[in-house]
Image (cartoon, rainbow over all chains, first blue to last red; front, side, top):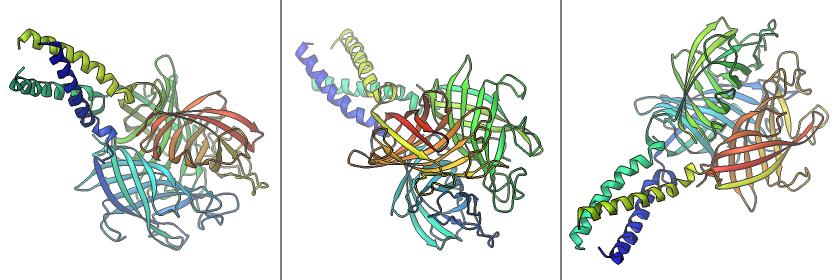
Length: 187
Length: 187
Length: 187
């Protein structure tokens, strides 16, 4: 075989490899999610009167405020522990497909900002496993992105980005979040 | 070189590449851990009388409960800060190989569930570095999986899954967890 | 084409592939950061008198201590919520390029150790996005490594290691951290 042919072959294979390389690395570098999930979850905060229905409670507060009323300055300093039902639609009374559990805290004095650390525990016919999230939530912004930092079960080793939207809120007792989860690393 | 030969070559190289591709992606797609570690850690919660021995303390609680007795409703709403010794065997008095530090919180009213955010700080002849964990812990389930979301030192950039088991508990003061850590991403 | 030529070709391509494989996996296995960022952030804790300037507040504390004075035993058990300005230099009064928001807690009785869970929200001409951190911070050690566990916007899917240094502290009210962020996974 002549060297020019060999060179041509190499050039050609190089192209071939470059093309296949993108495919091989697709999971890492392409921006198409390997899993895409959408859920709602519902938070009813304990206000001293709704023990039956409450799904969350204020457990820490800055000096001068208590644990049945969110702190006056945009709730700055409140830490809330929650165990919220996850549903497929926006109806609080739909059969839950899992629970959202963990904590959120309010961390800004001059507007509503929170910080989230929580887990989705999904346990239904479609999904068995957990998804772990952390991130900042500038509540008044329409869509906010947080990180999926890990998962277990069906979501083992997952990473991705979740877009959080406030779907509804009623005074300071109830809010409903829509979460659009795009996983870019899956097993 | 004839085009059929070229075609045959391509077909052959394609197989070759497909095979090597699996090998190249082994670290990512194979489910064999690159590191496998097992530890115990020991938590002694402060109850107002054991200041000397306590390794953790209740720092937040829902309205109506205090910080020396875990909250009545499955401890819902308690946040605990801890600095627990890590040992290689199940003996509280073995020489620690590191510390487990961070927080856990109880987040369910009708059974024992917790949420964990903590770090293993290992500092011994075998390991120098930290491992960062978050995840949900349904305490009464025999084995619970949480996420390893990062690490430093010997565990730089680590990701994986840790299986947590309650190895012992004594009333509401002492518990010991067995942690089986499988890292699937290592440097 | 003879089989020896074919063999030679394969051997040659194997080398070629091995070489390119390293390149293809560079992002994953090389230890050069894909992004390198340095910032300062400034924390002024609320002490009952500095409501105007304070950027953080004690929101949880162990039994026996309050929320305007850090707890006596190396602040063990204090949880602090913060919204701190991020600057490019070490001057508190420089124009912030973003905010550091989240929580830290003190988790060791016999020396100063903290545990961090927070987000950098960057919003300036250079960077638009968030970076999420967790990790242990043995405060008295000169440099401490924590994990970058995710990001959004310009930092979508980021992972890396951040080295934290105490750049200054004034009594128990003000401290300034220098954060050297090396991202090893970028989009």
